[in-house]
Length: 266
Length: 266
DNA sequence: CATGATTCCTTATGCTGTAAACTATCGGCT
DNA sequence: AGCCGATAGTTTACAGCATAAGGAATCATG
Image (cartoon, rainbow over the protein chains, first blue to last red):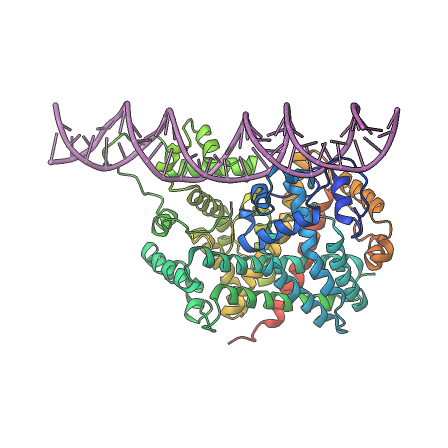
């Protein structure tokens, strides 16, 4: 299921996303009083997605954890889509909190740790990688996260469009590589086959099936001979380490480029 | 469904991926001769994914187009997963072709057009964005694409690890933003609501639900006032244009960073 | 000409989100 | 006090998914 924000009743889900914490305090409606709450449903769903993965998240599985049927959840949440939007914003809360309390004065260092927190966040909640960034979930916590970076970049002297672009590209760099890291981690957990074993088996098959590899791909072969695809730290899982290094390289390159763009807009 | 490459019989799918085009020419097996072929099944599936989207791709839908039942496809392909791997590599063929015939001498320009082709490719085949990069599909065409960039960056003087990292980050930048562009395009096609209308409605709702927005998010408000989120070219769909600009900004920043890293490895 | 491999079909299983109709509960009104 | 109607939660049902299992038709080879 691809999640587009706001497929259903937009006004309804926006109100839910932005509702103040003290809402639903006084209740004078007729009918049996609800035994669950939106928050409880969201937190339960979030826990399932975190621990068992997004494909284990179904209305039935959430209901089961709460001792309810799948259909009973629809009194709290209009659709699975809306539930996922609420989960997404809820999860972002912890990240926004941390970003706002960062006091690092240097913009480069501040941005680096901002991006690193985003990396860690996605490793903790890999299901967030499946949520579309087009027509995004317009919840308060992503705005808080955006604002916290915008403050830093604005002080550094970047123009509005540059801030927007930097934000977008930081998201791209993080999400692109962390997806590799997260899926590597998960694939290992699910299949039980460690990374290096998988790669070893694959390269053996590759040799068998493409004996002319070295002639067809001379530069890649050269790179391999020079150790570009070797695991230097034996203790860490290979792909995860490689993804992290790749990300760090890209982050530094991007931020250097951003530095030289300071003052060129407006 | 999340696609991990090589869940099934790895040897089998590798052989299928790397088979030479002239395979299956002579046939002397008993039993009714097959009326379809792996290639035909793959091309049909690819056409469905391109025109109707990945969620319209099912074994039933492919079978229907070919006048067969879903189950009959399993004589050509071991699983839906394997089918998708074959589709992915097949689609990459056109891209590898173009990349190999590019003669641009300047590495910066060559890399820019390499990345631009990757952008256009993903817009033409947005379903490729749903395929995991961890434990990747080890087909010949992605290697061709990698090699074509590696040749350029190797000549430019980058070290092996730098080449690998640059490749990975270019993929991140392209895939991150083009996903926004592709989903914006698709969401508009599916829902019929144009981008600007959607955003307009959303900001109205945002004002209603968060009247204190300007105080909570002063820098974002400032950016909006300075036109950071406005559509400058009225003819182009907004989000698509914004995604493209963001990508170009990130690409230039990254390549500038890469340039200054030349010669620092090995 | 029979054998056995191979293609393709039908049927069935266990998932998914959610529409529809129903029962049980309880606040506010007469 | 007692009823009305809104609300929470249930059961049942539907259309769709990948694919396991088993059977029928086809055809090169012994």
